[in-house]
Amino acid sequence: MKSVLLAPTRTALLLSAALLLGTAAAQSAVGLGSAVTATLGSNADVRTAQANLDKAQAASRAAQADPAALVAAKLTAKNSEAQAQAALRGARLSAVSSTISAYAALLEAQENVEVQTLQVAVDTKGVQVAQVKLNIGNATALDLTNAQNTLASSGQNLADARAQVNLAAARLGTLTGLGSSVRAGSAVTAPKLSATLASLQGGLGRLSSLVSAENEVASATLSVKLADNDFTPARTLQDAKTALANAQRSQDSAEKSAGQTLASAYQTAQNTYELLQVALSREAAAQKTYTQDSARLKSGTVSAVEVQAAQLTLKKAQYSRLQAQNNVLEALGALSVAAGQNLTGVGGTL
Image (tube, rainbow, N blue to C red; front, side, top):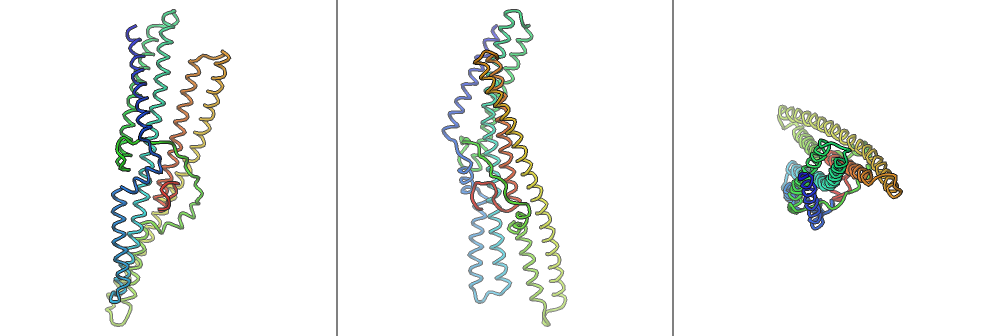
């Protein structure tokens, strides 16, 4: 009997701790949009890329305005500016994608605490039912022990879930600069993917890798032009042509690689949308069952234990839907990086 009394007491403590966690979360909750804004303002890579762009723009303006600057120097300065712009865009997109992943992880960790809290409540009731059955001779001592073990396991799962919240909060806090006490405010509905793969492929030229490859071709093309005359050694011209051919091959390879990465990311995003629909259907079914069981409880045709079980099933279905929803957002983040443009619906035009 002593162990039976201790289990509900421990459960009560765990539930109280979970409630305190919920209070702390409410005090420092942040939305995804605010989290992304904070990251873009504090991310070291973004700030470095911005500084490099400012420097490159100043150098390019000076070179273009300098009457003594040669054409090669002007092209180099122009290319450096284009490269810095692409690098900044890439850094921003990566920061947005990382923030989405961190925010989703924290949101799921918080939701999992609620799932595990309800699981503890269900298993606590299971111990109580087993005890009553044992007292009237309708269960064995082993049945009670098994119920107690199940409760102990779910109690540990709840403690682990709470620990995961702290770990996920630390990660998001580091990315955003908001500190480890940050909590995710609410789920975000991912925008529909209206862009076609073909249209995204047409915009791949903004990627840093492709801008770099294009710059190499432009520089090599200029070298050939400058060497194609009767006062430059033939060998110099031949070397310039070889360098141009190499640059063009590298550009072609970079374009193919970027295209393949984009196609893969696009397919992944489409798959996550389909899986989200499945999760939504399952949630709707669980909601219907819970609603029906709640009504049947009032009419006396099911027990409160059965309704509680249906409630847990619904909570788990809602958690799965949240995960599927977050998977869509994360896939859009990865697709944005691959496409060189923001498709996530947060962070604005980068």
